[in-house]
Image (cartoon, rainbow, N blue to C red; front, side, top):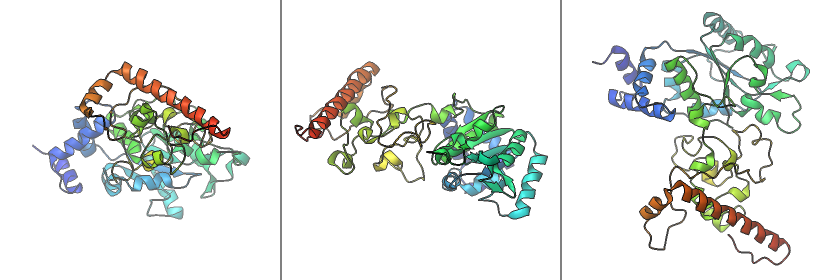
Length: 382
């Protein structure tokens, strides 16, 4: 028998069926690496638990992290704010302003000590006591130090909050750092990205309110359900890498046909994130940088994004087989795709043959490039 709470949530979600609601929660559970049975627990937590208070602080940032959240659709922003969490403070989204909103933040911290979720986007300047970012007469450094100790969970949203990002790039004139460096005694969940995928944040918060603890994190504080695999593994251009087909420059024939972007500086082989599998903006397949023809920037890696020159070749950490095998270009040999998938299913073959072919192709391509520079190359693409 359906409870009043379930019925209320179903109405708020536009009248979806109870079965579809449970299926939605089950998909969330699977996305977080949980058993499918956890979907029921998530559903129960959503409809019965008191909405967790959230305080969102913004420091040296571009508002891109908030903008990405605005474009989430499951849940929608209004369902998130009105039904799932209680957003007690946000400079961008709060209806109140000035003294009124600052008072609301202070009241929430006092009433919810040890229970509220603190989300921070943006880096914190530390030069000259942090005077390069002030809100309501206080520096970002002061605001963080007086808020974070009272939080039940602290989440760094985006690369800037995680480890400095854009603000800390280059000469770093304000000595900007991520909040992890400023909160050495607290566990901070880092959700890097520029911007990060909003579902990585939503899943983390939902996990916290369901199980009363944080999800499993890697050594950099990132949720493993989102950052445990390198982008290269699930990239739609991976078949081209295994086949040794690389775009040599933007706009060439192989680039237009969707070939691998490794030689254009793609950092996918050394970047951990779920960008190829959990897309942005609800606009379908291919809506991420590599999908539209731009190399991965490595923004989820502390020492890659904003640190490594864009066209520097990535450090290939491992050559594991992809999760899904697909045709790089339409096959004309008469061999059925099914047979190729079956053959490629052997991990040793995928690594030994595919990986070796890719590296050999890279070497041939480099040799061709050197030949062109000396006037003796044939100018052919790989």
